[in-house]
View 1 (cartoon, rainbow, N blue to C red):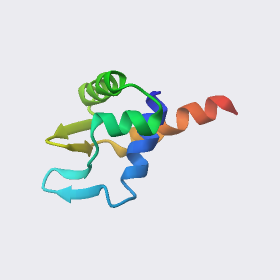
View 2: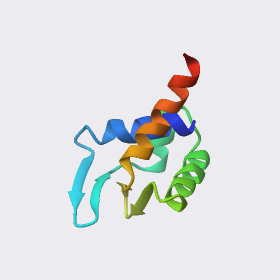
View 3: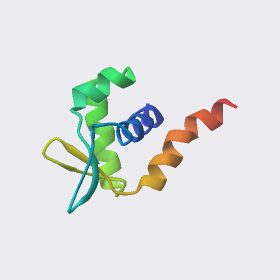
Length: 85
């Protein structure tokens, strides 16, 4: 699930959901929207986003998810796909 959510956040960063402000690059999506898009529960998404925030990969603001460490996000997104090969 972690890799699916990281992939989805990176996907959003390439769409109109992406924005930029003084804090950096962010995407706009609710926990519910992320859960629906990644076949997860809202609670699981909230927990995972919280974990990623504590690890310094993401930061959050009002309806914004800042992509603080994009390289780590990309590695996480690819990790599951590499395991399947």
